[in-house]
Image (tube, rainbow, N blue to C red; front, side, top):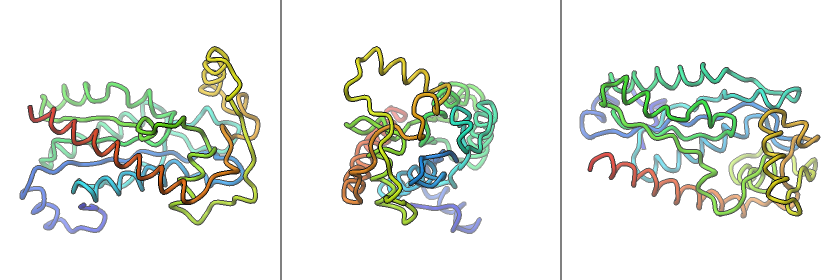
Length: 240
């Protein structure tokens, strides 16, 4: 792994010249995660996922974009940027990477509200770069076998594995969908995308009370394994 925050300009340019570098841009958010998780949860998790994948495959790790599109959490705390702003920042960064002779980029997303802004960004960037750039936008929770949540079992377990800022004594159950029909779950997900507090009053989707550090380590390993394989598959497809 080459973490660009720790490298000098000559060392970076030498590394890029020595081989075809692949860059990872982690994208998170700053938003409420109930009373027991820090507002930086999405950013912290996606940073760790990106770091481990970069270490495993020798990718170039860029600093995390800590702000995302989180307006749906209002009036709970959120520091949001517009969808167009996120797309512009990612576009500018990717074009800048091309100018530095880095032509393959993985955008690793850690927040649900960022899904639409990064959708089809690869097509736009390939066109702008004259097909010199290959970009894949991947959301890490798509590489889990279990259902994801918000400040529930999965996110809380992951944070217990990577952070000391979890306050488990304050953890409470949130919205539980186990006994809902598919139609009801679809409806509540649609509502949450517009107003999370209307879907779950305490800002939690799922049950964090049984989360453990051990579970978090297992889940993190699963994500890194499956997402890492996907990245390698993308590289094979790019070169074919």
